[in-house]
Amino acid sequence: MMPRPFNIAHRGGAKLWPENTIFAFAQSALAGFDGAELDVQLSRDGKLVVFHDFHLKPELCRHPDGRWLARGERHLVRDLSSSEIRQFDVGRIRPRTLYAQRHRVLHPRDGERIPLLAEVIDSVRVKPGFKLFIELKTCAEDRSLSAAPEEVARAAIAELRDAGFMSNAVLIGFDWAALIHAKTVAPELPCWFTTKRRAPHADRSWAAGYHPSKFKGSIAEAIARAGGDGWLASASQATRSRIEDAHRLGLKVGVWTVNDARSMRSFTQVGVDAIVTDRPDRLAALG
Image (cartoon, rainbow, N blue to C red; front, side, top):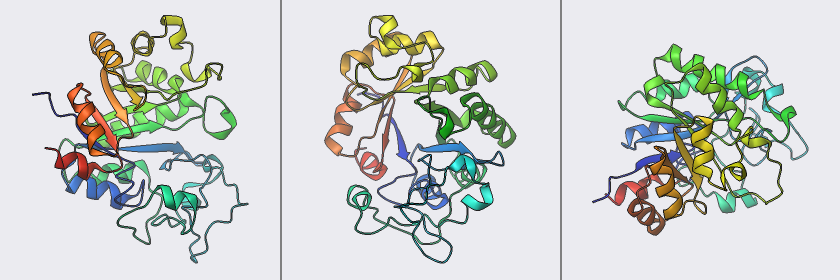
């Protein structure tokens, strides 16, 4: 029998409850899942807010009076204060949009606000051992979209230390500079380097000098050399041979975002350590 992988609710279980909300994270913990994945960014006033996109998303955000954010309104999270950000209702997806078709939520809930990381931590304490996979949301390709990776890494570590949550956290991210810096500040904090398929000649700044091409194409070798503790791979990248390669190098391996039961079984059978999913209820039902 293969060990059961961690069941990690993507954005708190984005096809069950409103994504990246206190309600979603609390429900994931109460349901007994192993953990949740979330995205953090720094606001203008230096608070870690939980939101995926660098701009507030018109398909998700409503003004306090119920009006949907206009498509022409381009609010960068980094340019807004935390109080301004928290005014928006993100409890349901705007109807008749492509985002609504692709991300149907079983249990929308009006009145949910964009939370702070500290609030999320408090909401999941109902389940001892519940883990938060915290994506440091910075942009290597365009630094103007976010705070500096080192700044976000330091803020996240300080928040986790203040909350006494270091042992329950894993830092993840596509911008490897943030994770590399995190390991210099808090070597004991696990960092799983995130990857996705990219065009062969795409900008390589995301790898912060550790692009896999320098290591005969081995993503696992690149992560190990960069000081990572794990690899969070896209489902298309996580082949059996690559997973075995990562394990040989002492890395944990997670895969994102897996929503169908057949793929969940397959990844379990090849020995992944974590599955990030919008439907953690399906993974839990597999036993």
